[in-house]
Length: 310
Image (cartoon, rainbow, N blue to C red; front, side, top):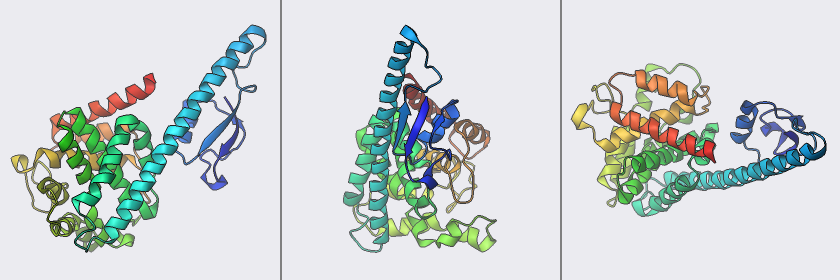
């Protein structure tokens, strides 16, 4: 297709051009993962333009493709607004985390419900949007992404609607302790000092302390917040739990947390592809529940295949 214009600020243009011909799928993927609001297509200039009767067929194909692209953009804009709304809600709630009411389950549940609803409708669109994280919003967008992934996996393994909602809430709150870590440490590009590493490793305990002040906070959410960095081989933190000491729900969060961390743009690293994440996570011995890890990647492949068929 020939692109006449991209609706975005010039600085946000992922390809650095306004008028050009799309020549490979990589350029399409970069557009999908960008903040471009819409793409204007000139159906008379695409590579498939021919003459006579074939030109009519080409016109129809281009028109259908344009409609499909517009629908994709519409879905993506809805997902962008969903993520932005969820991020703003988390920012407000996390900022007031020292009060008794701010981080109550009652306040968090609507945010989790909206993410779960979008995951039901357009899972890949939502996850693609959360791959892009600005320096100031890394923790919040990461929390939205982990919530979405936990919803996806818990549905895939048929845990039931009530548990799906609970795990979506836990995903939003699992990193609340990072709000007590200085931003310059969280987003540091260089190697962390021993003191900085110890500070970051405190965030599960800090988060657990914050959430424990709220009498309506479910025990599963507290468990996930404190233990999502534990490992089956006992080498995790903060409590060095191992094997059967680690609940199924914590194991779900650990997988989703690590997957989003390695596949997302961060201020200090380039993102890995889905297959890079698969290969690396499968190679880790003692870190993840192997059976659950297979289920997770199967659930992700289901999303990708459904999008491809559409």
